[in-house]
Image 1 (tube, one colour):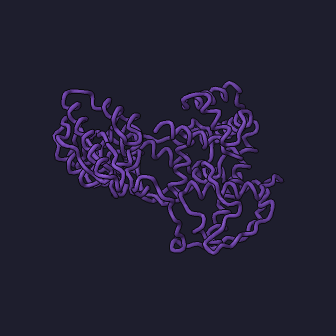
Image 2 (cartoon, rainbow, N blue to C red):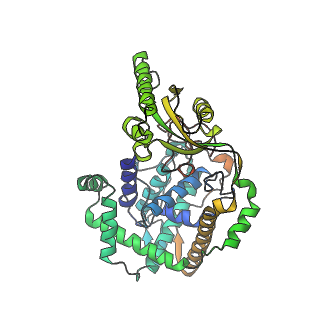
Image 3 (cartoon, one colour):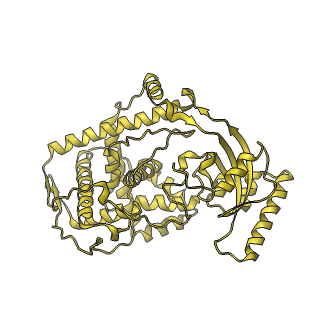
Length: 433
């Protein structure tokens, strides 16, 4: 739902002790995934590790906030994060010093808790070695924040620009009272929020100035990438559909099941009589996000949806509405198919814009990483953390936090694979994105 996204966005912006987040900085300098970045019709999705997904999420949140650099929402975690062995890591205070500026133990622990929470990891499953490794990664990011803050001190940001950004955030909430309530919930005053936002905008403006002109991608570059990764642009048979979902809770009594089925049948009758399907979805659908998308699922392949839903959608004719409700584990669906695409390979012109955007992002990441390396080499940095242990992939076994859809986050259809808006959780199968 849009309101939920807005709350998350504000939390990302205002629950911040330091305007430039550790996770964001890690995202900026993290090495790109070796997996091909462009797949299917969206030409933007690629498989990533849990950590990479968390970092990508941080970057996307910042972009959506129009350069308001925020951090992950704060979750309540025990002040001393304990691992599987219940051991507590003793940290010195401060944990580091950058050109004479101290980084406190409290700031490091707060940033670490936020990173663990936002990565859907259970802190109780982290061993002492894993926590030390995480502390080092977060401290490195905090060090970069200090360096960027120092370099960006002279960058001008007008009060008018800050106020404009604040107004944009306020407009994403139903009322001013809702905005103020979120501020209070996050233990922020409008003065503190404004100061943090201005600092973040200043840092962003400086970072942009350092990489300006270093992200140029030509048509020739894009064509070369397309030619070298042509197999990544192959599409299976695709269907574009919308749906109206009547949720049936697991274990619901027969009376509820029957009522939901009857409601679905009534919706089919109205749709077949000519009522606008998207308006019906806004009015009737119990799918999260239905009001924003009008039930639109965008294009999807057969293995991206639960079998019953996929079979019905692929068997329907273009322009038709399902004759009977389609039952899945989520409830009853009324489906309208609007378009079909046969299997094939997307042309260069179809994916050119996505390729250019991807390559530009890669160049920005490389430029930012180079800039950060130069800053570090010129600075006096002291790190008082215990030496990190070597962690192999076999030792990393984080426990994902339970979701509310019954679908693995890594298996769900990505928002970038649907249009418009975020992909719904309800009809998604266990197909890998």
